[in-house]
Image (cartoon, rainbow, N blue to C red; front, side, top):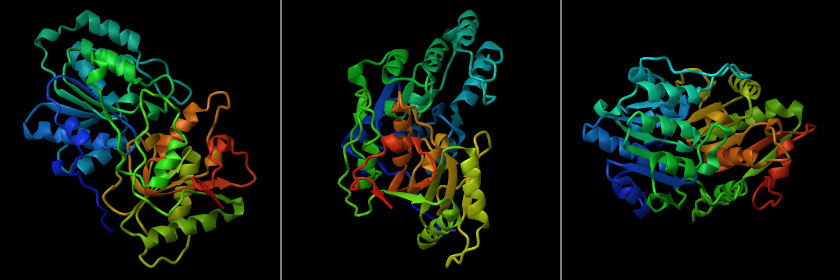
Length: 386
């Protein structure tokens, strides 16, 4: 398969604001705030490389397994990284001798951490005086709950480098605000570094993403980039009997750009499986042969390649922190939108749109109610319609 450019930048390639964030002292508590494309994750990885080169004991923590794999591939070699819940369960047991307490399963079978009981156990058994804890580098820090940071402080952790964007919270009730992180780590407001410039998106994509910004001043959107492009994001409505034709057009597009990575971001597992199944079975003539087509379901051990061209079919909740050349937002009519509180859906679209570097194409089935129509911009200079 064709390789794509997927490497960490050198220090000489950083902007002044990025270099200021990278060069912060290794010891202490640091919080870096920035919107999509500002280079937060890159800075976290460069921070990890600094610790690795100095042979420090460190761990790079991420929200989900897919971002963990992408980070490992971007880092290049031997990144000491883990998904945050798995790591916390292991260090909790090592410190207390007990299994991390969980709440009863929710409707999806998932068990959240019982933070009340967790805090009680830590308070009753932990003595931090003899504990030597690693440096912590935390990516997408807004996705961890406030109790996580409080528990780490109570366990004696002292050195934090957290990158976060409050406007990219997509799991209500389980995320941290900027203030939560500052309070949990004892960081003064004037010590927080804010990244302003967008280095990922073209101007049209950044402008569309800004339509979904909820106006939260705690995490301002990045400035609109100067990278002009004539490619306007597109909303394409297709009849249900035209689904196979849509799949063929996606494959033809990929065939024309074999070194590009295309993300098909879906609202749920049913849509994900539908697209993946059709992409891998439809008959269509391609000059470069069948592209690499991969998918990931939450809970699996991911085995996706981010340094090669092809297609990734993933759910919206798995796209945090990832980057694609082109993004297809599949069957947006299947997304839920609470008319009384649209901010949650706006934040989700803010995240999904901002994954793309060059083009965003939204796909919507005709004849179906589309709850998210109410949050889509009507200006065809921002979102073209066909």
